[in-house]
Image (cartoon, rainbow, N blue to C red; front, top):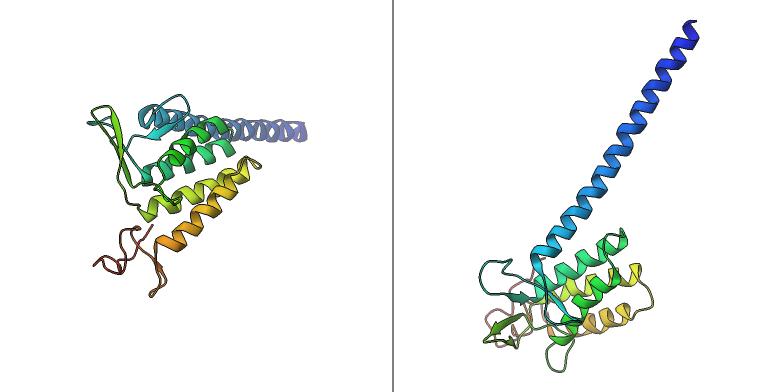
Length: 192
């Protein structure tokens, strides 16, 4: 009789722990999914049918985009895709916006884009933290969705970061392509 009671108690404990474990893991996924979709609702804006940007204003004041925010959004979209919370189309629309707002003769993204009287204007300089995060997002997207050219895009961007956003003397990343040898900001270290 005692063995049957012990088996019943152990079975109950194991079942209880299994249920608690399942609920805990399920709850984490539900929270991740909810937070990701709430973030998309609050910050992702359609520029047109094929492009989306991260609204750096976050609903406060007029919309504007920053390369740092775009890179962050692209990285979140790639990580969400990895967990099946988002889609490649979500990522691709963010990527399309990046591609449309690169600086002339480079793969660096314009640091800031702002809507002025229904015309989006690009700032003609880059910010290296945004470019680095975009490259990281493209490399991650290539792991999640191989065969869509994301690695090639990342390599081209990394090459331009090396060419245009590196202090060659100190061998460090500058704050942007505008911080050249003639700038007093040439020796300012970009941290991420």
